[in-house]
Length: 241
Image (cartoon, rainbow, N blue to C red; front, side, top):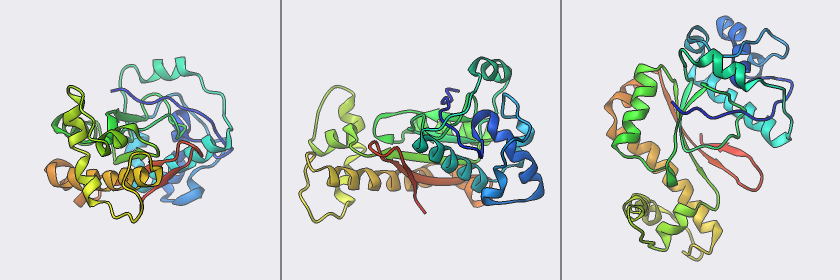
């Protein structure tokens, strides 16, 4: 597993050690902001016991609040060495992310990260997601695109370069499916971002279609699939409804 490291923090502490603040709220069945109480006891690793008590919606709220801290430029001290040591014998990721940056204040072991240009899916990506959810216990599958995406631009421009050619071909259906009245050009960033958003939506739909394992978990409510867009200029992550 290659989890992402964390970043800033506001008083509703979350992230790797701060996921543990959710324990009391999770056991009480609380939802929303009431889960994220400051100054509760923390630890250096997300435990299986705590992770298993969290719902997919609670985990997504954790990500949203972490991004809020990131945008505010606030951070709380964290000890990455302790996090590394605490998670060395076992990691219990709460979510699997298909392409994401260190923008949601998550720590070592909090997430299972699949990184690939253009957040495309293939058999290896799907297999990794199935491992993260079915075997490792992750409860959220988040596909995240971002603004001004170079892979999207390359697909629009029909770029060809070794194995990259095949990767960009996976993005092209999103170009055809994007409804946009303006100029269809890689130089038009509004169009690029519209295609990136459509690509996220189609990737999420494709995961459901091509992975019976994940689709079954979602149907049972054990896993929630979601899409999001990261704005490179503002730092904000928009979660799709």
